[in-house]
Image (cartoon, rainbow, N blue to C red):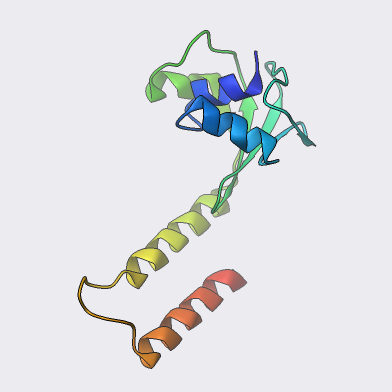
Length: 126
């Protein structure tokens, strides 16, 4: 089975074209090698996905004949992503929610801007 199809089937990407684009952009690695969308995937292969805010590692358990519900799709791969990656993602999401300002409140003041810069700097150091 093609890797772009398999990634779409397990719901790693919303559309097959996004899955193919990620492969072409070098955001998908199969057993440590960058792959093209048509590269064949088989059970036991290690897949690394680079999303905009975090890196995810999964192992192919089985191939799917078609796209299925998320609850069923999780049976076809094993998530090998370290827990600290998910922790970092959660921290980044919290930081972004803190950055959102009330509509109509205008531009951030210098004090607000410095506070945001310190927060981003702390996140980057972790």
